[in-house]
View 1 (cartoon, rainbow, N blue to C red):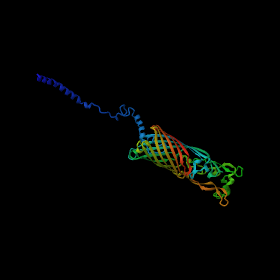
View 2: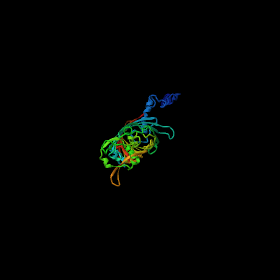
View 3: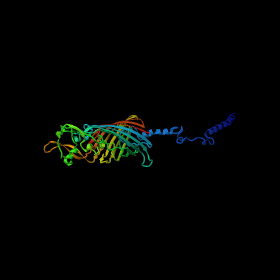
View 4: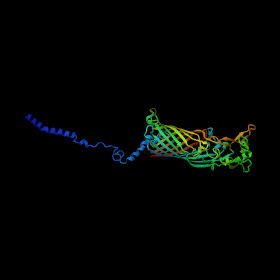
Length: 470
């Protein structure tokens, strides 16, 4: 009985087991041709410009927005210094427009001779200057070996200058030369090219080289007074309101050999206590010829040099991240150090040579508020080679007669001396505000800490700058 029942159950269960196995095989095995109907994963690049593609339907908008990320990678806005150079370059096919304004005032105690203020000459003289700069930048890549990572820059300066007051030539106090005038002119346009040589990603520092050509677009013949003509307050010992020009006196004496270098002398005390009158400048037909026969300003006050100029430079940048110096903990944190040197070669024009100029600098930039605000602490130094002016001029002098010990006034005929040379240095703190990686605003103060051997150096300069990248 039990054997019959078991056999029956086994026979009855076989169809059910077979059906279960068939169902499992059916579910586990694809139908004929099914592998040809399953779509492959979508190709995101084929779908560019569609809703399912990279960046959505408006891919161009998405692509343009990536410039921000490129900027942060190539040239972080808050790690770029406000004033001095750096080794960063713009990403390829990126443009930048920059505008800046500098304000400077040079007073009598800002002119130097022998590292001390030359107040005997310039105590009552001042210069006000406002300088505007338009900068156009373009980042590009030539996609060939050694021809990567370039930034082109075109600098267009515009300069406003005003001179006021008077000078005492060679420190002679009883002669005042009135030097008032103003100018508004385009400066020398500079075309710069910077090439990144190595990046910090594969070298301890970023390193870049730069070169520039300055076009002679700025005037180099701006003049004192009214076209070079100025007035002079001179002693009038006779108090008759009349004093002839010294050129007329030279003719009466029979020529320069009977007037200059001690041939003609007057007791200085007689002139120091005499009344004074206002006359045209008493030499050169009334034109102030200190720097040229046509009354030009010195090179430091000219908008341009009158000749092509050239520049070479090198930049080093090191970016720091949190933990770079484990010994110091969180110091310095996210920041950047920039060092560099620039040398500008100036050529002579019209007998005037501005002298070469070397600029050297260091900058430490530290973000203060995330990616919005940073502090830039820099120093900038300028080494000016002596400028030169062709020709000779009459120079008033007070000398002591070795025989009598009396102070005597005379004129010497001398080669035109240099006006500027030596090294000046400035501390330059700045604030950098970047509300967006493509927008920057800067405010900088330059404060003099070292004076040149000769010539003007403003006590302070203030600069405001802005830039937009697209």
